[in-house]
Length: 111
Image (tube, rainbow, N blue to C red; front, side, top):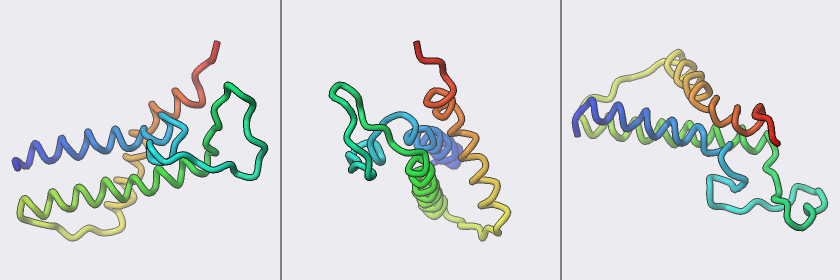
């Protein structure tokens, strides 16, 4: 695989994965959630995912995208050692990529 294509693939997967927790009410897009000690919602309303679950899902997806990036880097040939600075920067970048999903979920006016 070409280096440029692998880089763009990682960016595209990271953008999709960062917005996935805010796009639906299921865990990782396909696992239905149990109730979290609350009474089930009235008929016709969907159960909402708590914010801490969304953050935990975002953290897990960050590591999944990191593993994909590592695998692509390994397939290309050179795997470079990274310090803690790399992980802090990529974590912040992942949170920035999640901003559109956060805005659509929490900041958009509902009419």
